[in-house]
Length: 157
Image (tube, rainbow, N blue to C red):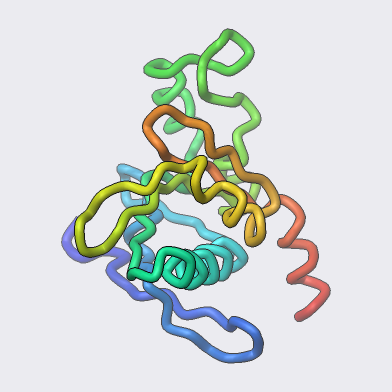
């Protein structure tokens, strides 16, 4: 999309402005549309920092999906099926734009070797930073969202 959304994200973490390791483009859908809540960026950046300490190595968080439109959701459900029919896609997905960009799917890998870190190995750490985490997918990706943190952030502002 010609460098559209090619912008590094900055957020306030613990009272200080931080230029994160994330780019707005990483969160866009296939049509270049993006909506991401700042709580997700803060959670991802804190997670990345802790994982680097835990594994004593620089790691990368690779975003595979973020906010979805109903069109995106229906397209995905055609491939993976709806959860109420045994599939993997929720009709009430927190990825939907009506939730304000609170959900993200990602996997974690070692920066040097590019080897993925199994999601069950890091699920408990993810739960420190996100309200809801599902870390049992066969492909090692993780779904995380901040369904209650957005209200907490509003109170702090």
